[in-house]
Image 1 (cartoon, rainbow, N blue to C red):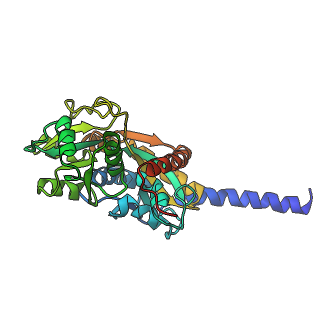
Image 2: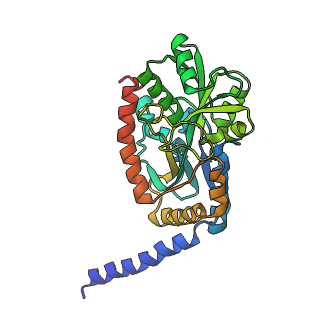
Image 3: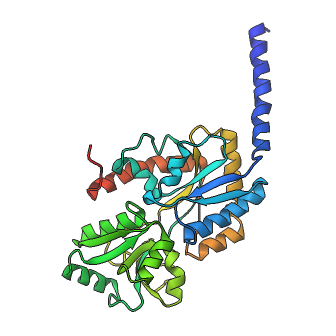
Length: 320
């Protein structure tokens, strides 16, 4: 055997164990998981349950950090300046894939994030105060048509799925609504309970307030009615051909080593299967929605292309 071949083979023999040892030793310190919405909302509560489960599997704390604002895109932006070592992770809401079409940025949501796995998706709906005169979706539409630009609704932020879906509904029905953005479900629920807005488009963070009789659900946005709110019609039942469930998962900085990504994937996937996480999700009519690293990467690319069409249709694309 030639000397060069011997050296090359020796290099392979040395590299393989190093690759394996790194994955086995990771992590050696706490991991930071940045989420896109404030404490106390459905994202915060369910992701803390998931992080707790993953902590036990990884043998190191997974510390949840709330970073709300900018339509849920701040955690993904944080990844762009974080070390690609697996110790900084971020929730990736759907709004991340709209960002380049509405804001000038110097990074690519598809290429500049290492996608670990998808974990769940939101269940959405529209709610009003229990004492509101807008008792049904028919009342909501009728009042909006009679009072153009005066019906105020809140969402979890500009260009989030609740905001864009409501704008799409308004476009389809020729309604003029007044949008008021908030940083997340917790802030949004405070606003509607305080009488600052007439309606709220949100994930089912509103569930406890509906169950206590303080809010009423006018519609939900899934393919079927939600088990928790069986009397609330879907958008499709109301004649609007729309379904919105907004999957989200976990990403790491671009260039995170494949073995570390795999270790994170395996730990969070195991945590997804724990009863504690499923129970936390069920509180908001959410369910585990698994995508592998490869599957989630493909979803990111497909969604990036699809969201461009939606943003352009609504006339929200940034000027060139």
